[in-house]
Length: 82
Length: 332
Image (cartoon, rainbow over all chains, first blue to last red; front, side, top):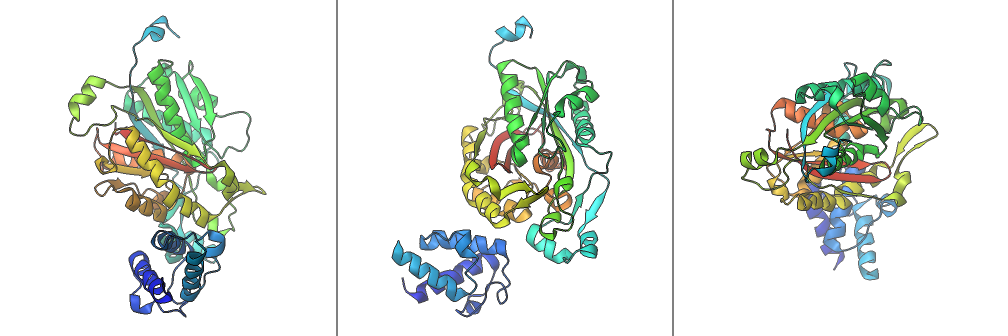
């Protein structure tokens, strides 16, 4: 799966869970400050990403995923490891 | 125990009535915003909670439990003197000794009843209801009063803005007795399922006990861990409770999960697949009252007419321990 595919996957998840328009989901965006997602929404995003990408994103790692790029990199790396 | 009880044939147990105690003392989001760095919008968005009830000093766990219990017995038309067992679910007593159920039983006038406390965290009511139903089924009791009464605010740091917004006080109660099997089957034959109180699906996650605990005298909670646990691991348990009752989630008329946080409830409801079921939202006006939250939410649904007698409702508690328990019941 390419970085572009993963980014598109996150855009779908963010639209479904938080109603964020796909065009707003760009790599440099900060989940909290730019996309206005709180900690519980991030858990929902993480569990949806776990299902979609077949990876595990524990809470300890989730708190370090500040930007969309962080999340894309995490999934890309976890996907390779799996 | 009378000889008759020893020879009685197997039978079913049902909810006969519910009762509630809600304190008159409100603590609104505006009250909290006036003294802490928070706002109505912030609290509502993260928790769905608008206001909560804080018990007055005289509204003790026993006093609130007695009031809720008396209302449930009156609605059921049951003489307190004929109650065989009183189970009190609470996890917020000021002292571990003595247990408080005997005082609840005494003050209600249930003088011949057995009485004991259950600490099952926020799942305490559902655990107690399961034991009450089995006690009636087995013939050890004709009538059991299950009471859940909590004073969470005694254990929450009033200056901890992440916790104080969540919790409230209150009590709920349910009368459990033998089910009239023939009448139940005749009345609501469209959907199968339990005659009264279905089998319980329960379990624990003791490895994660520190996720919700009292530390240095105040309640602490890892909110995101609880949210993830409730919205992922617990949904299959709720499905299991439906399976045990012989129904599909889609057959449910009402979902009454522990009133932890509206966002947890809405996520669980979406995942469970019960599109026509009414979701209990008592948390909005009452906060999280631990074991009392399920019977309070159930009493509200019954009182408001959002559910009808004979409807199937899923009760589901989860919380400190970690513990969880749920069962499908017919609305009394």
